[in-house]
Length: 254
Image (cartoon, rainbow, N blue to C red; front, side, top):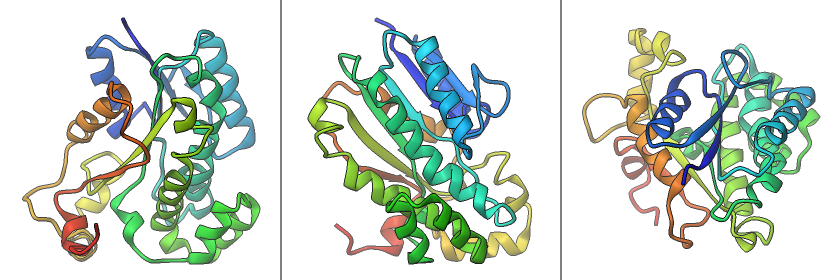
């Protein structure tokens, strides 16, 4: 039986590849993005988040079987927007759509984190995110724009771990997990991967055990599994798909 899957960030990159793979598997996909999507919404704003939930309820009145919170941004020149979508937009997506997931017989939810989540940065910003103080988090982001991407991804990774095992999620049968991609060849990373100086920086921040960066379809393969697996035991895991970055940087992490 076809499942209904909602994917944010579906107009490009990893999420577009995942949407294509889900459709190829026979799923009905509701795409969300700022353009070229079933639901057009800006998840950095309260209005956009409300639009997402309202339109999802309209398009899937019987509920959602899976949600991928994949919309993301990595822009040092847009620090407030980066935190707004990477953390607060992702949380609003998952919490706002949880009632629709609860209507499914086998609900699954996934959030895209990053290997950047293992990097240290602005702890105050991370804690402001986790406390739900969006105004303070956005102000802090503006003061330290270079670390907002790893900070926002570290915050959403921590939220995932603190939330997935709660009565509202796993206790209600809604299984929530995450993925932590390494460097992926997308439109967002294309300018960076053409800059020799940036490539040298990537070698330091994202050392890899394999050759070559990932294609979006490689990350999508894992995401499709997490959006549809049948076991009831996989809960709150952040699975790194990064060419070995995590094991190189944290070999003793268990």
